[in-house]
Length: 110
Image 1 (tube, helix red, strand yellow):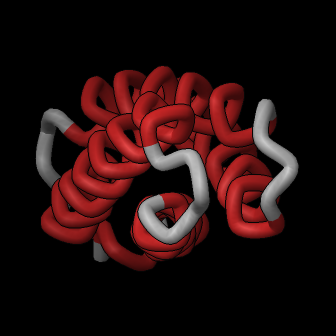
Image 2 (tube, helix red, strand yellow; image 1 turned 180 degrees about the vertical axis):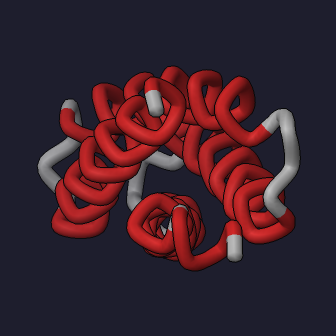
């Protein structure tokens, strides 16, 4: 089954989406929310694309590899932005984004 073949990537996408949701919510509680604007926007985009990619892989969609390639790009951008901020939630999100980008690149290349 497709979902078993792509389990590592699906799990990475779901973990990344959860980290991004947490990060965006936590960023909204920071003192300078305006400074966190790009981080919040990328968190939202990243969570959405990760959940979409996980669904495509779970269904065994013929477009999974292409979507995962794009997902890796979004995760990379989000991870880079989160890494710029020293908040624990941003650092945790950056790590989840890096792991997901790596999993998605690997899946897209297979």
